[in-house]
Amino acid sequence: MSGAARCRVVAHGRVQGVFFRDTVRRRADAAGVAGWVANRPDGAVEAVFEGEPAAVAALVELCRHGSPRAEVTGFECKDEEPQGVEGFTVR
Picture 1 (spheres, rainbow, N blue to C red):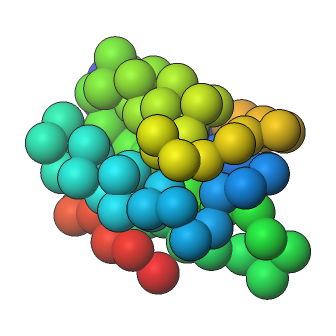
Picture 2 (picture 1 turned 135 degrees about the horizontal axis):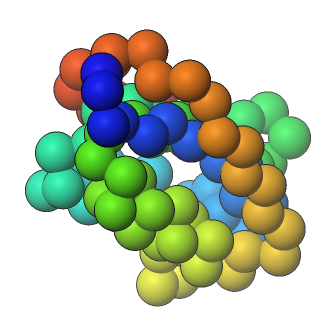
């Protein structure tokens, strides 16, 4: 995927049960970004975004702040090599 970006993010805080995953899914679908978002057993939300760099950056920024009812208190972001994934899923 020439020109594609891929980023893995983890958001900590009050991020489960506040429509975080659904908000991310809707924005990813609208932006044409592939990947997934999932609740983790430790209470965090983890996501992988792959696609056009500006669209990926916008989703990373969304996760940095969370959905309207979320309270993100910690945030991690790691760039990865694009893998050519398609579609976006909630796990």
